[in-house]
Length: 358
Ligand SMILES: Cc1ncc(COP(=O)(O)O)c(C=O)c1O
Image (cartoon, rainbow, N blue to C red; front, side, top):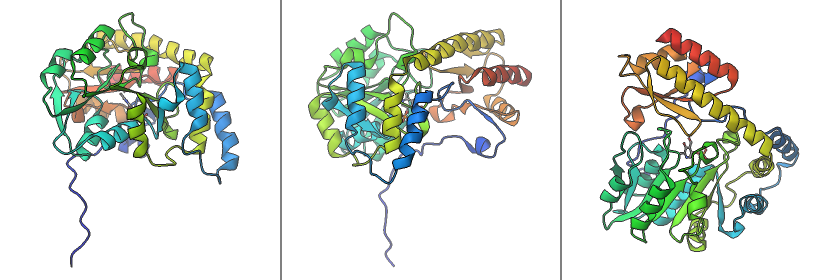
């Protein structure tokens, strides 16, 4: 009998690495770059209020949230598109722009979702080598061919935590062919304190060939609700809207996200907390001779070569003692782990256990 045959998809599956957490072996989860302090109490209040009215469909255009975003960041609401996480914006971009035989360039250690969707929509991936875990404009430009359609990058970059300077980013756009779409992922921009840095939004909000993405999953602490957004020129956002599922953001997410934006006090608390702990983590790792980068995001990348330890063993030992971090195998970063900054109690416990394990 002839059975239905799905298309062959040549992309790796996104693995969240949660099995030890689900089995409740590890209770402290520092593996997904989620916010340390959680959502603003205002967002939770709004979530509970909306819960009373979930028989209604959400607004398929998310007009209310788009207007709140436009007001906050001084943008044109018509050029904002909402996604079920910024993850979905990346998918919409690939769906709307990629054909078979197109090529997509990503920095070698960039967020894995870019390559997954690009492959699902038929493109070939070109990996641009990084220099000391930093994105290299030169190496991206080296990978350009006449088939190049999109360049994806995150600034700060996940999983390395490094940034690309505003000069370098502007230079990249200048040197890329005009019909190559540059996607700048601003997922962690709020945490950055550096004079050399400008967010993708600040640099490119009026460019004709750049889409910028942002998320409510990180600093806003709403990863579980799945809200992200993209900003770009009218024509490109129109193309994304054509392939967007109609009710892609649920009601609770729309309203909780809107409520969280203006709680500046709460956001500043999270930024201060992360910046403080980032320095403490950095210092502790250095004292333990664990190699690490100064991180501009809410996570740090650790390498165990110098102390001649095996990252897999350390991962398991940490998990058995209750702390889940992220393995870096899918990123092909050897003998390394990534840890997210948690709350005070979690961070103290993590450092204590790491010292014991090492
Ligand atoms: C660079 C980067 N972009 C986007 C995301 C995903 O965000 P969202 O939850 O909005 O899909 C992540 C999550 O880890 C990330 O590291």
